[in-house]
Figure: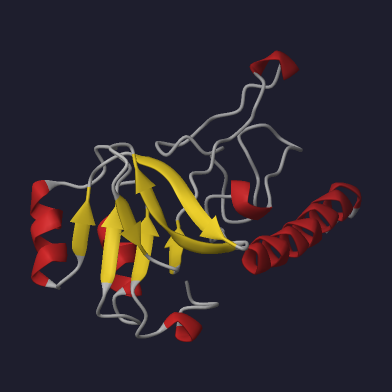
Length: 170
C-alpha cells in the first residue's frame, strides 16, 4: 500500500481482504482515496462494530463472494460477484493470506504462534536450535517483498554470527 498508494490517490479503489485486520488496512488506504470499497469475499472477518467505523469514514463495504476480478486488455476493469453483479473499479489492493507450508513429517517439533505462523524470536530463531525463519514467514517481518528480502539478509547475518559463536571462546 505504501509503495503505490500515492499513484492511486483520488481514484475509486477496491480493497479485498479476508482477515480480521481489514479495518486497519482499509482506514490506511482511505487516506489516499475518498472512494474506497472494501470486499470481505463472504468471509467473517469484519465485525459489526468495525463495519460501522468503516461506514462512518465513508468506506463502502461489500460482504458478497467474489466470482472474478475481471480485466480488459490485462488491466483490471472491475469485480464480478457470485450473483453476477459487477462493480466498476480499475485500481485496488488485495491483502494476501500467508499460509505456512510446513510438513510435520520432517520430524521437527516446531512451535506455531496464534496466527498460524512459525513462532520465532526477533532474530528468526525457532523452538528448534539451528532452525531459523526469514522473510515473509517470519512474523516480525512485514509481508512485502522489499522487507522480506531485508529480513532474509538480517537473519543470514544472525545465522552466521550464531555459527561463529559456537566456536569462539569469550
